[in-house]
Image (tube, rainbow, N blue to C red):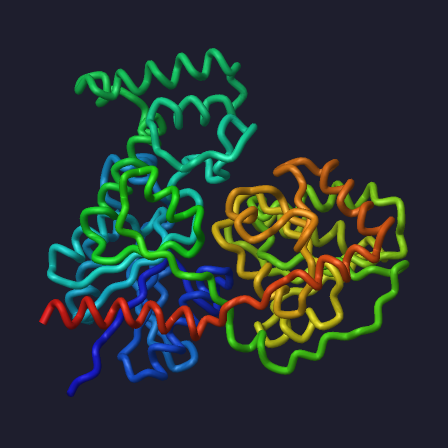
Length: 435
């Protein structure tokens, strides 16, 4: 019997781009390949990159223009390159196509066309931007949003973030939403005013054309439910098995030289600039800040600015280009993880640290709050507030015994092998039902 073929679709992949989504898909590929499935990855390329292989996994490419235009970014047209994408789908003939997040190059139009060709489809979001046009799930930058896409509210919230007064932004958002319902006014509007409508339409395409939707965090499933998409399946977030191997946590602890660690790509959404501000103001300079990072392809200036700052500070140790095995080994000597992200879905790094029972200081973003019991398994600070982050750093510095107390309450996370097995079970049902 010919093994079933599964194609994972995302905008980029290793080794050129290493972030949470890519690592997640890599671990799925490893699992399904070991189970005898025919596995492939399909990504977009702006530089005519040829197909290649990574860890024996075939990675297929399709071309897109180097720069997007405003109409495709705001849903007024399918992304350019979609015909090349569909040619690859028709050539590869997968039994099942698993989409991961939507962005500039791949979105709900690709999902729709793939389903219309007769393929089984799956979707897993990894980015809060699926529900939020700002990407941070902060309603008027004051409270966490429930993820319900209401066009007037979303546009008001966006305008408020751009500096408009609250009352003005509310009025403008309502006016834009009303104008959208009048055809000639809608056509006359700038593409950027269609952002909230595009979010709503994307969610509708997912609901209509995905045979199975996976939510990797409780808040994601709640957000789907808020948008009347009630058939998502909640699966735990899992981490690579390498983090469960050779657990050699160092028992020695120096309260006057605490090892703080930041792990993540160097992108503003990861909130490193807040950590930079707080670290500059930290009174106790005996502590060390360890950074494990990689460049983000669209944020070179941000990367180099922060690297320059870090390399000039004797209390900071800068690392980049680490493998998962190297990250796992490095964590053995760390005391506290700092996660200052503006937005996360279900951060893998928190779970990776949990294998060593390392407490975390994190922003109170909705995707993080699911994973932390404040003052029990970690500490939270107000999202985007470096001064509140500094308070938490000082709390640890002043009472280092808190670390062992918090660490004792941390539960061991799920392995990606377990998560992949749950996903495989759902895929097998779909394939069986389609025969």
